[in-house]
Length: 295
Image (cartoon, rainbow, N blue to C red):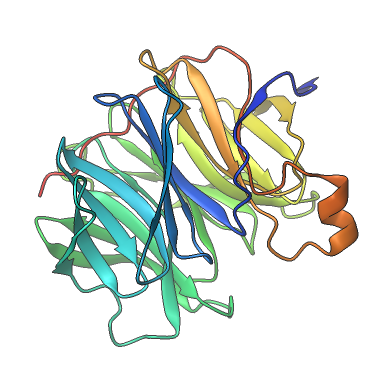
């Protein structure tokens, strides 16, 4: 039985992104970073001061990984770039489907080994046009192919299990992973099959106990699954299209979630003014910080 909870959280940032995505937290500066993919923006919110900045980008981007205090790795429709935090300058790092300009990056996350998994998809969301790649030391390796909308990329805290989904199929996949390299070491299996339920499996994170927190796009909820794939709780949010959660706060004990208003008509947007905002669930969690990318 799934416990259902009403929203008791708050809005962290009411800048309404067309497609808010890719949130991550930097514990060194107490800062949340996330993207407005379609708006070509990187958003920055300092939780200590409340200071908010929006950084225009030259291309659509979707994933940010910390390298160190001064550098970030970001995935864009034009490849992977190292971003200087102080200046915002971008330096090319590695190609990512540079032979497929019709594609863009989507969901991704850093593995405990310091490698990055990053998904790609068609800008028109064409069937099976995308893939998931493993990035380490500047080398990009395709690990899963034929994916329409890659999402839910996340890992168990010990790095032995990886998760991902094709949101078009709505099956959360589980795969064994080499904890030292972040490379898959087995074949993916279906952990959660929710193809017949409303909404789509979108972005996910895994907490310190190995439980999976998933944003369910189109259903206005964040679901929590145990490691066996049983949904044990559901948290409502005031936006029908939550896209991705992130553990935030100096103790990683808070949960933020990006949202979007992409595709909503005027009436739907009026009915949910939080669509596109960065929200906080308002519950205490036992989270973990995203690992740094080893360049």
